[in-house]
Length: 287
Image 1 (cartoon, one colour):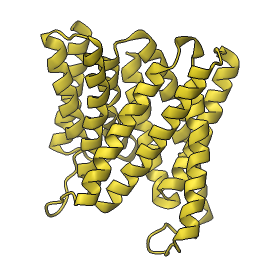
Image 2 (cartoon, helix red, strand yellow):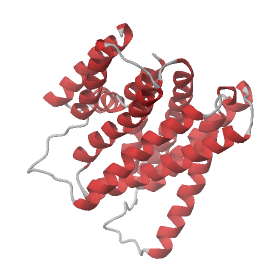
Image 3 (cartoon, helix red, strand yellow):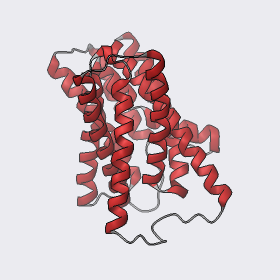
């Protein structure tokens, strides 16, 4: 249940973040989201507490580096290729990393468990699919970036899982805090190297539209912070492989949020993905 709540928060966060990115750009939206998420987690750390230690800080920094670099690689892959192809492939790789490590540690699944893993991965792929004209394909560059992104984002889950249980929410707080700093440095470096053209970056003339986008980015960050709280709790209470797969059902919740909030119609593959996600969740419960 905690892993599904994590996926739901990540999925709805993705919906609000995507709307904000249309006007603020990917990096600007991510900085705002990380900042508001870090603020939420900072309050939780103050209230709940947690044991500060070298491993807690170290794994928090590792999570920040892998998650932030993975996010940048994802955006770069989406620009170079087709996001409808990049997103599901990243999700599959992101799921595969914790599953592979968990199996290597000796975690075992029953028959229902492996069926649930396959169904959950298929659900994420189908939910991320979009109808598009023509036949989009991955370029060599976007393909490499997709693999890098999936592996790094999967590694960020491993880093959070490796942090001491006594640290509570400290590692994910550090993940977002260091993430803001890294993204800020990335933005400054890009601004110095590249003279950005208006055609490539959103230009906002409407002050109201800008304020709405900023609010959307901040809401996305709050949801990101909540999702990280649920992720830590899920990793402390459940098997790594199961948590890793269920968390990456977030595309299902993204398309459902778009359907409920924006009245976007769901394509047949997306409806099939939602159905498979429900079946996979039930199978995980009985596995």
